[in-house]
Length: 321
Image 1 (tube, rainbow, N blue to C red):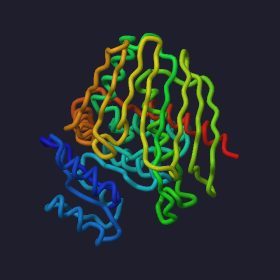
Image 2 (tube, one colour; image 1 turned 90 degrees about the vertical axis):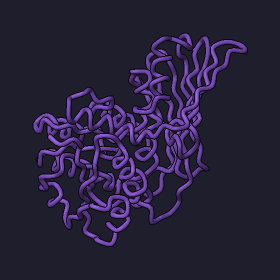
Image 3 (cartoon, rainbow, N blue to C red; image 1 turned 180 degrees about the horizontal axis):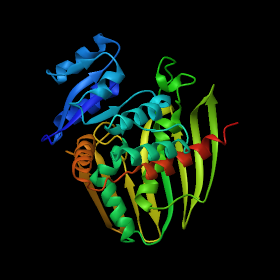
Image 4 (cartoon, rainbow, N blue to C red; image 1 turned 180 degrees about the vertical axis):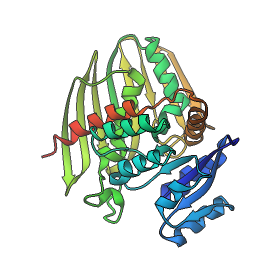
């Protein structure tokens, strides 16, 4: 066994180049060794990050490489299931970008492939590795807010570019799949609860949503979310209880949208602010993945957990006019 988890990158996406490869390269016990792309010119910026990077001309060649332990999949959404399964069948661990599937039922195939391969497969859901969300989960478990009564989530950014993959028909785009996964999954992770009912009002362009207002009833608390790819950038999460409230002002893109900050108020004149200026949640994700793949350490975001978020997305999309 090598000292590092050796990664292969399936495709030369901008997000992989700007965010994930630097994180994998900078994380302890991780090393990027290869990239597969059918466009060699796209490999040049990656080689600047990883000078000894090997470039494979096909995805199949990367999956067959003996010096690759794990595959990172940043392909378009509708290709995630296919290539995750192929990578698992090739004996590789897999970290796949969100949303990992197009429908909740697709997770049955992913789970079966994971179990048959005895490899780790996970959705790249980086927020569960950030200490601000660990704090939220702990405070709720301790009933620091009293009885939780309501959760309010906003996640939006303005992207009307028709060339962007999120705005191209047939590619599994839209706001709910792109960022609704955070608006839904974060609350499920923090509370450990699943919605009993869900309703949504959607605005659509062709086959993808650009605006979604979602209301749900969880056991013991109500939930409201606004998710849009046609409004100015904003993200907030508020947990409101009988004895206090807490707010996250950069809950999802911490360090990019803004500094991660959690404000907790439990009584009049008793407010505390917790900041996390130096945390890179992508590096933490890579280190947790490597630890789990190599030693079996429990991974905090399983396929079964990701399936629950996809079920919420499916139920919201089903409300489309």
